[in-house]
Image (cartoon, rainbow, N blue to C red; front, top):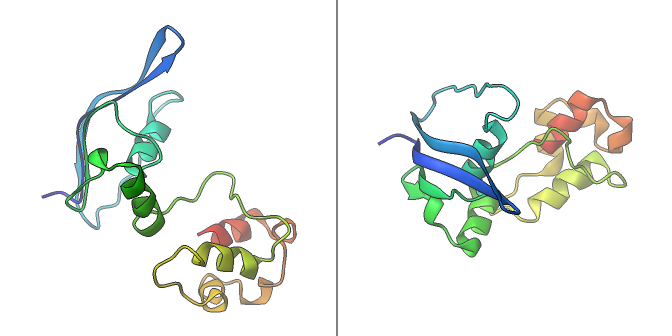
Length: 149
């Protein structure tokens, strides 16, 4: 069984009286440990695909499986638990809290983790041991991204 499986997945957005198919009958599998790149033109459905896989959006039809779990059948509570414990996102905009230090941003995120790691150790592991007291505005884009990760 594949680690990730999309089987005949479609996502239709209703815009007033108009239906927009962001994804139509998409099927693919990804094996555990496989490296995958998602590419395509603007409007091809890349973000929609990732939002559905991440439990931030639901499929209109089809089946989404991750590690044997049928994500496409999860209710709201199950999706919240899935997003909290099983999936991670780093957005284009890092969504760091601007008036919190790097350490405080990591500590904030660790409050919803099952087994949080020490914020200072995590920041040191990504090369930010000397930046823990800096605010996001005092960090480069790459440093902000590492805090978000």
